[in-house]
Image (cartoon, rainbow, N blue to C red):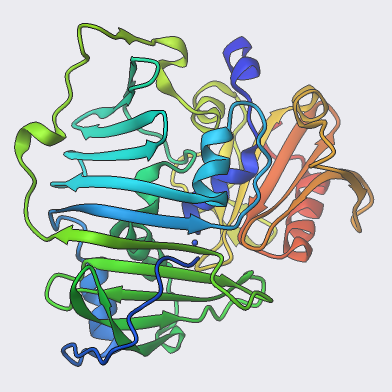
Length: 367
């Protein structure tokens, strides 16, 4: 529990795992040709593109002003500014993503059994063994192939798909696909993707929130090779000149809650079915673009760790006060019920979060 208290961060950002999203470089204005591909066919190829190797340079841009609290500054930067990412991908257990900044870079290596991270500025490496059902977002999740595959995977109705005119990305003419969610509770207006028709590899993603005139989060390849990277590039050995940090075993706050909190959330909540298969203190509920994430935590952590003008306390329609966070694509509520604290968050309206929070307050799940 002590490690959990030291590592607590704002749980709302975990919602970006489910609906991670805005505007890269402007598409070329000259005519572009690409093979005609039906939306359903392109979507199927995108979903099946997980094993496809590639390497390239990605630029992402987000306008989500996440609160920079509890050492979550890297996430605030990742989704609230422009990020430069260099990627090598040879499969789910063999990849490398470098997040570049003016003072150095932070590299993430996927390997069988876990992940390595390397902070070049601090010369610190960290190994995280195993996996959890939920976690905070990582640079990998903002790469167009990863983000695009998750978005297409969230489609629940073929009517959500329509074709877009082709554009040129990283020197390739590629067809486009628009997803317009049917769930009224979703804050996503539409998501636009352009993908290589042969491999299904997504090259550009733009997601626009309801009420926004411009994309809220974008990721696009500026350079791309659809070929396997060299094996040594995606393999990591801790440098002799650095040190290995073993604090918290490399787990983020969401993973710590899942592994260390004794609470078990139910299989159904507010009429929504739990998506995460195992009962734990963190869970996702619902389908499509209206997923709600829930975490059960010690009540004291809500006021001790979330006391900030950026997360004001408001009185909610279901009768209690909650700390409230709002953004175009992620909303969240944090509140106490007796000796238990809860956070509900997701790419849904505050009205939907209030509906789920009312059910939480009434049933006190995970006691």
